[in-house]
Every structure is written in C-alpha cells, then in structure tokens.
Length: 295
Image 1: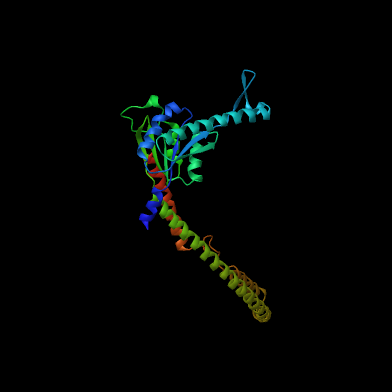
Image 2: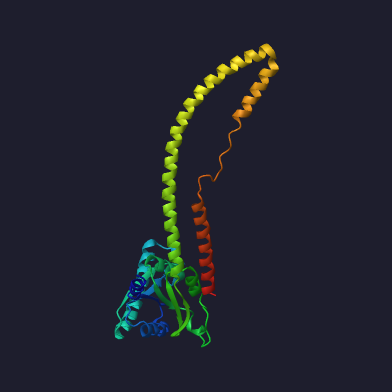
C-alpha cells in the first residue's frame, strides 16, 4: 500500500517558482530540467497587481486613479507576465520536457506561493533560496526572506528544494508520519464526538423520563410530608411548643440544600481528555521540527 502511495507521488508534477527576469532565472530552470527527468513540470509565477499607476508621466496610488485606467494598466502588466511564462515554457520545450504554466495573482509573493501549495495540494516544489548576488560556494542556508517564509509556513506534506544559481542549497523534507498521526487523531476525535453526542442524547431522553417520574414521586412525597409535618407540628406543639416546630423547619431546609453541585467537566470522558493531550503534543512536535528544518 505504501509503495502504491509513493508511486503516486512520483507521478505528480513538480511545481517550480520563477521570477519575472528570465535571464536571472535560467540557471535555476536549467537545474530543474536536468534533475527532474520524467516528471511533469508546472512553472509558477506570482503576479503582483500594480499599486502605482502611471498617468501623464507621473505615478499615482491606484486608489486615487480612475478605475478604468487602473484596470487597463493592470491588464497590460498581466499580459507581460503571461509572456514571461510562455518564454519559460519554450525553454522547457527545447529541452523536450512537458511543462505547463500557472499565474498566481497576489500582492505578496511568499503568501501567494504558500496559498498555491495549499490549494493545489502540491507535494514537490522548487524555488530560489536567494538572489544570485548572494550566492557563494559555501552557501548552505536560506538568504531570501521569501524562501524562509515559505519554508516556515508551507504545508508540511510538501517536499521543498531551494536552489540558487543552479545549485541546490537547502531541502525541507515532507513529514508524512506526523500528518498521518494527526489524521488518525482527527478520526478518533470524530468518532468520540459522534459517540459522545449519541450518549448525551440517550442520557437526555432517559433524564427527561426520569425527571418526570421523579416529579410525580416528589409531588406525592410532598403531599405526604405536608400531612406528616402538620401532624408532627401538632404533636410537638402539644409536648414542646414552638421551639420544637422551628427545629423541624431547620432540619427540612438542611435536607433540601444537601444535593451535590454538578461538576463543569462531568460530560468529558477520559478518552476525550487523552485525545486533547495527544493532539497538543503532536502540534508542538510539528512546530519544533518545522523550526529546526528552517534554521
């Protein structure tokens, strides 16, 4: 079963994030084409809508410019982005690699990448680790704020490789064991909730039935108690006067106040508490491992 899952992952396409400047990204794309033989490739480019719109030789904030002018200018910029993606596809075609393109529209490049990974359930992803000017042969850590953000926030099921100037710099492994454990915990939680709900509904039905029976019994006992109290009061009045009668009233009040209070967590079973503890420990372990991978 696990071998079938691994084979399915191998057949999945590899998503590659590239920048707008094709000359500076050709070395990274070349590394991808040389190291990902047999895999389908999807070129990803995050398009940020222009916030400053040129009007009569001067740029103005988009919020202060006519909507039609803003729309027209942004459409031209989007068309340029599509041409850049087409250029990357032509490079892949010349290498005999099957590729497709994906344009993500987002004001933040790193947030756009993280959202794209989540929405497309990406299992394999490649992006730049830093600009070429920061590259050195001894470079072993991420220098790009965008790369660090993606490493820290992207789905843990995604295997990410960071490259710079055609060299692999850093790899963030996918952590499937923790995800499977979390899925198992969630399944247990759903079963616990459903069983807890059915138990509560049964208890409510039995409780309402018992309550009606107790109310009937209480009314009967109250009538009997009133009769016996009146008789006792008469007897005590005959033997001891009003002091004995008042002591009986005090004893009745203490008896009425003797019912124990309900506990706030009496409906929570031991299995539910165990689940909450285990899920908390798992989330803490995921956070620690994610931090170590991105150091």
